[in-house]
Image: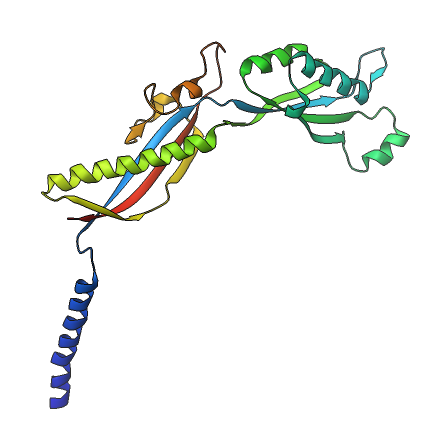
Length: 245
């Protein structure tokens, strides 16, 4: 029984030594964890649109075949100032496309369809093409994706802004408790939040890019395009651990 009584204080002594060694080996006994964020609104300059075209036949007339429709569409694109490099085929099929090619041999009046994807740089270019399209052949015209050509640059700038915002927050928080901010111990890669959102719907970031902010002139355009697309919202949040001096 006495042997067990000796084991307890020995165990406490070993735990105390282990804890003391951990404290001694930790170069940063006091730290602060802060988050920083940055936001930007971007008017997209790459608008990807899918145009669905189909063969058609007016009452009492012959069917307008797909080759004619394709030629007319591509000519309309050229007239709108769109180079071939921004046009690609998205799909090519017939109505009820199961065994379509076999059916077409026996049913020459089966209507075929083709879908093109066109990349626009502004809404004005899109409007110009819409005015030139064949209304009978065009079955659908829809935006499938928007992007910005300088997205990589804006991401980099916003990540840097988020890190700076976190450091600024760390400075005034530590000063409030009579401490001084030390070196950064750990920086987590900023998490990205990309979505559509108008400027009145968010005001929560430490840093928001405005007219005097980063890249504003390139983002907003020159103001001559008229009504443009809804802005894309970019938001980054970073978490940083700082040592306290």
